[in-house]
Structure formats: structure tokens, C-alpha cells
Image (cartoon, rainbow, N blue to C red; front, side, top):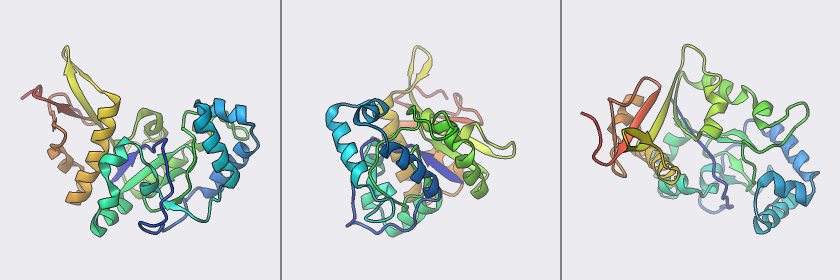
Length: 252
């Protein structure tokens, strides 16, 4: 079993907590993206990033001094978005770190795929950014089936806690013999399950923490998840989508 999760836009270095372990597996391909971005103008980068001047200036400075092999931060400690706040890896035990290193994979437009303790440097690049690299017209083309291929070499079961922007890099290439289970965290509204962005991110991070604390090896065991007022809803779930409903609307 492998768990996939999205990265976060906000990143910071942390070279004090724990040491990074390995370089990312696709670093040679990351270097090509890095070279392309280094050749872009400030205005081109700002348009690529879809951000304000303050964020653009910060990330242009980062590009200017970026070192992909030295002064790195373990990936799971570098990302600082909502999901990572609720995952709270900085207070993981050694046993919990070992669990996520074995089971969790972070998807990335810049790095492709990361183990939690892979060394990274702060960057800004979403998977859906319109960046062409060589013959590839965008990052989805650039990464193609590579991310999925490496995942399915490790496992025949994926627990998907990533957003669609990132999960489609894997879901499009699931072999027929494998399972791809998407966890849906929603609320009932007018008889439908509605997902809300921030709450979903909170629940995804909380789910990783839940799995690490319990050292879950069988995906069936995540159906007992009961945090942030979510409960598994059997009636609304199927083999590919496991629905966790918030509140008192679960069907019996």
C-alpha cells in the first residue's frame, strides 16, 4: 500500500529538525525544469506562477540561488500547507517517521514524486502550470506515466489523498490488477456529498497522521477513521471511492 498526497505552495527550509535521507528519484528531470525556469524572465515567471509581486520576487530570488543537491530539507518538513499542518510531522515519533517513509509519497510538479525524507529546496511550481519542457507541452505531458510507473512497481494498492490536479498523474495509468482508492471527505447538502477545499485538506493531513499513529498496513483499517467529525459512510462508498461524511448525516 502507498498513500499519495499533494504538495503545498508554501515551503520553507528546515535544516535543523532531522536530516534529509536521499535525493529525489527524478532529480535529473527536475534539473531540466530548473534550467528552463532559470531562462525565463520575471514577467514570464510571474505569469507561470499566477502570483503577486511579493511572491514572485521571493521565488525569483530562490531560483537565483537554488541548489538542488545541498542545504536541503526533508520534503515532509518543507511543505507548510494546511494538510501538512494537520499531519504535523514535526512531532512524529521515530516509528511514525519510519511508517510514512515506507508508505507516503508526495506528488510534485517540480520533483515528480518524493519520499517524505527526500531532500528538497523551496520552489514554486504547480502541476497544472503551463510550462513546456522540450517536446512536452505541459507538466502532465512531461511526467507522463513515470510517476505512476514507479508507484506501481512498489505496490498494487494506492490510497489517494491528493487533489485531482495531482492524483490524475497516477489515476490515468492504473494497471488493471491494481486498486486505486480515493478518500472523499464531504458534507451532505441537498442529498449530495459536497467537498470543501480547506476542510478536505485538513482531513487528508489528519488521515496520514491517523494511519501513521496506528501503523496501518491494510487499507480496510482506515474505514475506522473518526477525526474532525468524519465517519466512513458505507452507503455512499464504492470500491474506488471511500466517502467520509462530516456531521450526523451518515446513512445506516
